[in-house]
Amino acid sequence: MSWKYGLIRDMSRTDYLITSSEFGVVMPDKFPKAKHHYLVLPREDIPSIFHLNRTHLPLLRELYNLAQNAVKIRGVTWEDFQVGFHAEPSLQRLHLHVISKDFVSPCMKTKKHWNAHNTELFVPYEKLCVHLERENCFSRLPKSLVNEMLSQPLICNQCKFAPESLLDLKAHLFYHWHSRKKEHEQKHIIDGISKMSFRNTPPKHIQAMTPPQLNQLNHRPLLLMYHGPRTFGDGHYFSPSQRKGYTRTPGNKGFRPPPPINAPPHYTKKTFAGERTVQNGQENGAIPRRIPKTDENKNQQVTQERIQQNLNSQQPNQDSNQQS
Ligand code: AMP
Ligand code: ZN
Image (tube, rainbow, N blue to C red):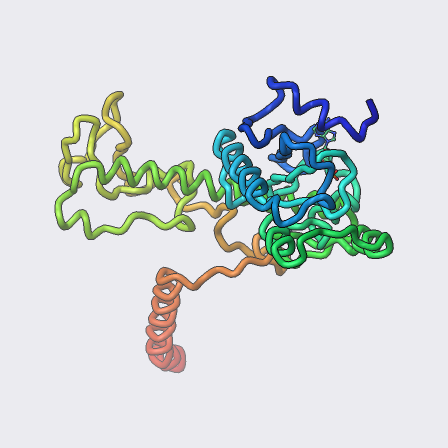
């Protein structure tokens, strides 16, 4: 069997499939171009996108539903995916690409691989449906146009970075993926703490306390630094004064004593990926990010202004002392 029929051969291997229905099957892409890459194929023998017309719209909807099921089964986030068809497919049997937008993969090896998924050569599901509704077919693009798109300059799909080489792009994409992963982990930890803290309604004066913001905490010393509302395993609430001097024992979830007055360095705030740092004139050492001005920044500014005013008001006295 020719390599062109590889998908048709593999769709009958039930152990290989992620999910299936009476309308189609979902299989993992054998050479994934991202962290997650699946293909949805109809059971009906439709050779390619060029054989579709308006009557296939309900079937396409079924394939789209299958794609959503597969993403759910794999426990990943639907919004992180792009879903569509290649305008110039190479393998037989219509197949819908369901691919995560990170594009972090050792199989992403050529500029063509990138441009096939990140130019007009990738036809999103919704766009194809609108096109079929209007035109009743999808025609092959002229060869010259396909070649032009495949050789387009590389550009990041998540910011405006234009790398000089695929290697640069891959390193850059890895940076995006890693930052997102870290942010996700931070959010997970804070959500966990919020759930733990607010399981029982705390007293009103504690309710008024605001939980820490993502950019204020490094996840490692998180529990050491945050002394907001806490309840223990049995739901009993301890006031801050009751907690004083409390040492953690197994079974008393999530509470540690406040830092000592002369706290060692690991109690202090450290910067992390989500926080603004400037290195070599670039924020976070690489990709510029827009950081909203927080109240904390404003407060810092006000404090600095006050210190300056105090210094200014002391200045004449010092001068006069020196003169005398
Ligand atoms: P296309 O350019 O749309 O025809 O893409 C075909 C996709 O099928 C590519 O992403 C390949 O990595 C993938 N592929 C090739 N052979 C197999 C196979 N036997 N099983 C699953 N995926 C495959
Ligand atoms: Zn980017």
